[in-house]
Length: 85
Image 1: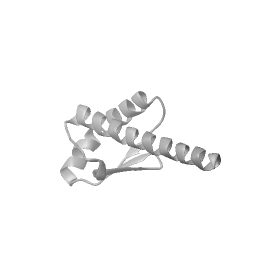
Image 2: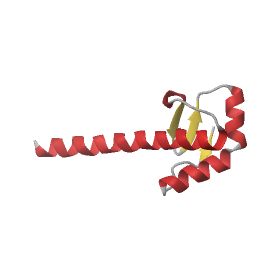
Image 3: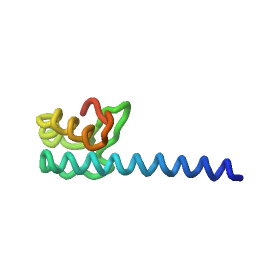
Image 4: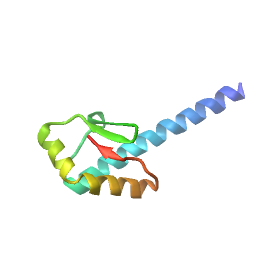
C-alpha cells in the first residue's frame, strides 16, 4: 500500500510543478508584453510554448519572443522553453 501512496505523491508533485510553470509563463508574458493569457490559452509541448490566441496577440508575443523565453528560463533556473509558436 505504501508503494501506491509514494507513486501518487510523486504524481501530485509533478502536477504541481506543471501548474507552477504555467503560472510563471503567464506572469512573464504579462510583465514583458502586457498581454494577459489564461491557462487554457497555452500549452507546452517538447519545450515549445504553443498559444491559442488571435493573430494580433501572437504577433505581440513573437516581437518579444526572445525576451520572454530568456526570462522564463532564468526564473525557472532551467531550460523550460526553447521556442514560442
